[in-house]
Image 1 (cartoon, rainbow, N blue to C red):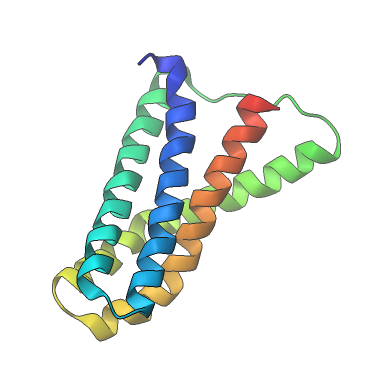
Image 2: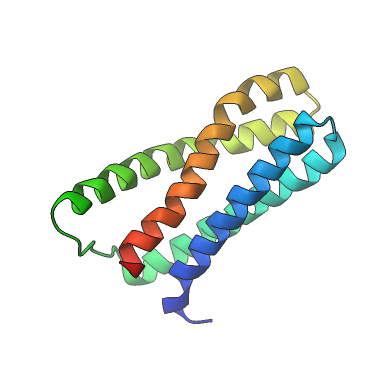
Length: 137
């Protein structure tokens, strides 16, 4: 794997995280706590791998300029800015949500997870969209 491969890896990790988050949600709705726990730990680990890969890439490459013009440029920046702001939120809230569950503080975990989950899903999906717009369009 080379440095140039990391954006595609990052998009893949975001996509995997998205799928794991949806699986985790479905499992907890079905009352399968242990399966939910395993899937959510995997989602957290995949997101941590993403963050590591993302930082390595941008430490070496810097920022990458979006080449689109006109309306698509505005759309890109709206998605990117919301993605960045909410990703910072997830970077704080996901560990708190996880640690509450691991400490078996389930009421507090569920309360914060109702907020963290949809934002984490949004960040995962928009990560893939940003990749597509930046590297594939």
